[in-house]
Each structure stands twice: as C-alpha cells, then as structure tokens.
Image (cartoon, rainbow, N blue to C red; front, side, top):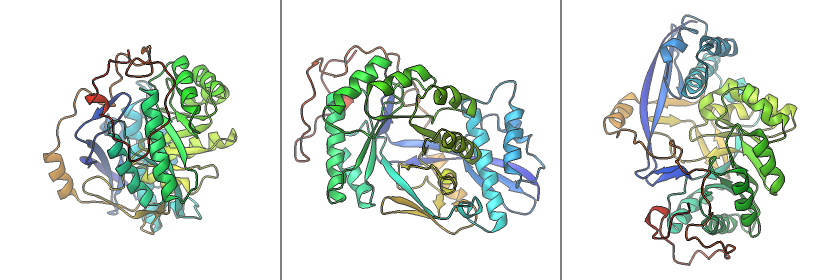
Length: 411
C-alpha cells in the first residue's frame, strides 16, 4: 500500500449560540473546521481534522510511503519542517496527516482504531465544555441541561474576567448537574485561557474557592510559564491543567520538571502520535492526561489504550456539517463504535454547501489575544472589590451578557 495524494476541505461547526472564551467570542456561533483526506493506491482513504498550512511541504515527507508505518512517518514530517520549525498551525497540519494515517492503518486492518491500539473498553469518560462565556445565565443553564441529559456529571466553564460572574455561573451549572446526578457532587473546572498574570490568577481563584470547590483551573497564565504555573498551583487548592497549546514534547519538559501542571492536556488537532507520546511522558511523572478539542475522535480512540487517561472534553454534541462519526454519548461518556478506522465518514456535497455559505474569519474572537490581557487591575466589572456574594438559584433573573453590560470596564 502506498500514499498517492491528499486533499483539503473546509466545513463548519454551527453551534447555534455564541461561543468563545476570555479572549473573545464568535457571536454567530459558526466556526470553520478544516479537514485533510489522504488517499492510497488501494482505494483506502484516511480522514484527519486539522489545518493544511504548508501541507504540500509536509506531504512530501510521506508521499509514496506505506501509510501503515505511522509513527515513523510522523517523525519524517517533523524532520521535514526542521529549519522553519513545527509550531502552531504547521504542527496542526502534521497532526491532521498523522490522524489520517492512523485512520488508514485501522481501516486496512478492518478494526476500529481503539481496538488496533490495544484498547479494551470502548467507553471514554467525558466532561461538558460549552465555550460558554458569551451566554446569559438562562442560556448557560439551558445549555448544560442538555449535557446533563446525556449523563455528564462534570463541567468546564470559560471565565476569568469577573469573579462574581464566575461564582454565579459555576454555581448555576453545579445546580444543574447535581440535580441530574441525583445529588452527586459534580466536578467543576474553570478555563481562563491564559488571561491572567500569576498574582491575578491566585487572587481570582482564591476568591472562587471561598465558595466553590474547583477540580482544576486551566491555563491560568501563559502556556510556557513553568515557574508561573507552579506559583499559581502552590497558591490555590485546585489542580493546574495545561498543555493543549504545546506543540512538541520538548515544550512539556520544563513544565513537568518544575511540577507546574497536575493535569496534562493535549489538543486533538495535534494528532494521535503526539497524544500517545505525551501520555507516556505524563505517565512517567504519575500524572493523568486529558484530551482537548471539539472533535477529538482520534484521541478518544487513543485514550482507550493509555493507563492514565482522566476524562476527555465534550464540546458540541453534534459533529461538523457533512461529517458523521460512529460514536455516541451515554451516561457521561463517549461510546466508540465498531466501524473500521476512526469511524468518520464525510459527505463532500454537504461540506461544499457549508463552505459556500461560510463567512470570512473575523479579526476578533477567541483566536486573538486582547491587548489588555494580563494588565487588568480589577477582577470585577463594576469596580467593586467586595467579596463575591452567594450564587442565585436558577429562578433568579439573569444579568446581561458581558457585551451588553453597562458597568465600567475592568481595566
């Protein structure tokens, strides 16, 4: 079997609500989803969700090769980008090719990837993650009620801009999940998306922990700040989670050496081989791993085969337009199917139609770091530094969205 070519496609994820984080929000809830398809001379094609930046250059490393030698081909792709480096979207392109190759390997073997990798149990524990910072309280409750209906008992909220708002929203979600879990205390996580300095992080989280029990705080400071992550970790009760934006094992080493992270994360877009290697590195430090991303299909399969998987992020319950996946969510877990490979199929006509109605990427949103990130003096939007008040019940009226509030800015 030989690799003969590839093609790139772009579809969309239509959330039906605003999605974003502390850095910005996509108000229309429409997010582009790039796809790479790798073809072979035996008619078996593999699918990887990820960008196609420098794709021709990277593909040259695997063109004509047997796709079943996946890990060796992964290293060939890394070497192909040696001089310019493999960070950012280029690493995502390598990850998309890598995932497509694993898909081919498992399809050729006639097995689902989870079985090929040595997994025993097809169920993968999940936690809910709504990218929800742009929602009103009413919308937030409605969103997490849907997750609760699928048995989710853990949730990660986006926050970090307003202590009182974070307390209120985390408490509302806790109430939703507790009711659905018949009194079982849910795990709550907060993702600040690198919006704080070290001192801001400790002050903000300590205020939250006066009222709430947080399982982890995600990316409280910049991803590479090993000392800063360790300082924050020593100053709060919650665990520190990070790693989704790290592109290579060499970037994890200083963080692990400093004891800076408690939950080791890896983004779906970086590929299966990267996740397996990150998992082994974390396991050597007795740390759990947790995949990140809206379409972590490859990493879900891989998670069944690693001993230190904790839980995987569940964002939208629906796949992108034109993409079908052989899995479902039940009793708080992803349940993988028996289809050979990743269990992904695509409808290129539906994808083409989605592409035609796709809007251009704007110059704002969560992909752009705000100018004032890490420079805000206050952690509350109304300028009142008083301790946060107890959270309201579900019946209390919802305050306006952040972009509708008439309060003074927090910087």
